[in-house]
Image 1: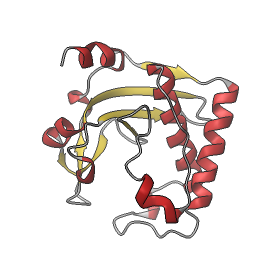
Image 2 (image 1 turned 90 degrees about the vertical axis):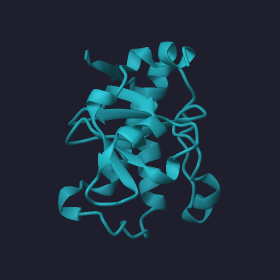
Image 3 (image 1 turned 180 degrees about the horizontal axis):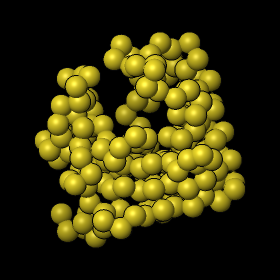
Image 4 (image 1 turned 45 degrees about the vertical axis):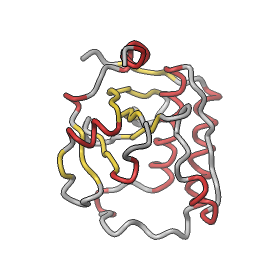
Length: 171
């Protein structure tokens, strides 16, 4: 599959970095999920900025809205179902493989899952790895090995990013 690289403009990079930093700040006092292994993780600010860069890059590529939303922890319940991009696109940032996490709690919500990688070291560009209907990803995914509520979808099942509009119009 040909790789799609999205280059960010300076202002886009600045805004994604700002939003990622704000998300990090809003979660300063929040404990990690029990299955998180800090030895395998990067610092929260870097992870949040990279995730925001990926979200913005997907939105830019698809010419869809990116809200760059941030909310306080006490507003999580009312915002947790907000799409990352547009009305129904969930963006998963990957770091060490091209396989993405699929979450059980996001089933039956008409979501599209995009897998993306922020390119090190500065995250000024993003590799779009592919996309798939979220529920289909759950069905084709394999157990994650760390949570029964998470499966891993392999790159081989993903559609090419450029096929997003074409594939969706045929369904």
